[in-house]
Length: 255
Ligand code: BV8
Ligand code: ZN
Image 1: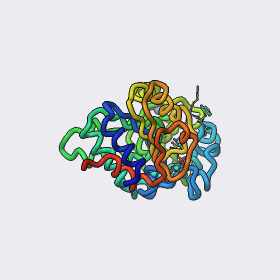
Image 2 (image 1 turned 60 degrees about the vertical axis):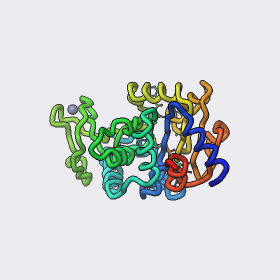
Image 3 (image 1 turned 90 degrees about the vertical axis):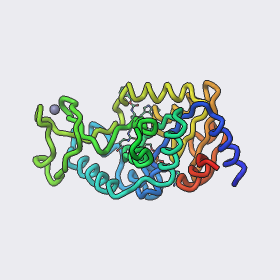
């Protein structure tokens, strides 16, 4: 075991409270493309073209085509060893807050699988950018379970049964406010945690990227797991160069 992993394990073991911030990189080994990496999602598309309210207003069919494709892709993916190790740890410790930028639902699936008959609540993540698997009405804001989407034309796009406006994926687009309750819970956890474990994020998107800095500002330590250096690396006490599915179980598993 590397020295960095041994030091990080000890910090995580001794932490009374911990917050975890994950990004697209934790789901890479589950087969979900990242946003900015080589084969990143944004590589084929531009975030400005698709993940904004302006894009949806301009071309809702094109935006739904991309999200329907991502729903189909992610539905084929499964949580990996990193999601599972985090879920087990959070269930066992009870003082861990998982915050994710991801909208793929893999943390919640890992939590339910790990909990079995028990309550998964302790391992359910704060999804600060919403969820791919929930619809929201673009008019009255009503949230609902996802409906099948026929993105072949605007006229076949799903509409709200209450007000008739177009439904949209219940994700936070660029330029949109995050849910203030979810953000306050994430910020509160980060501002009091002894340790912030940051996994698989380029730390470029705000306000999520400011969460680890909140832990550091009150005297907590930041531990990063990423194959590459990021905008956050210089703020990390320990930055472990490695893939999440290989490293995270080594950091958290008992024994
Ligand atoms: C807001 C949902 C304002 C949709 C997403 C301050 C400074 C600068 C800019 C801003 C700022 N404040 C606001 C902004 C604007 C903007 C922003 O931050 N822009 C950035 C690009 C500069 N922020 C916003 O617009 C936010 N809203 O602040 O509102 C406001 C104020 C008042 C009134 C109204 C509004 C909203 C941001 C949310 C955008 N939505 N997603 C969807 O998913 O379709 S963001 C999107 O990027 C995803 O959620 C994604 O998770 C997120 C971050 O990307 P990462 O997760 O980090 O993924 P990435 O590909 O970048 O990196 C992957 C990493 O994994 C890499 O480091 C790689 O090395 C690593 N990796 C790869 N393989 C592995 C691995 N790691 C481990 N293991 C592996 N195997
Ligand atoms: Zn409506």
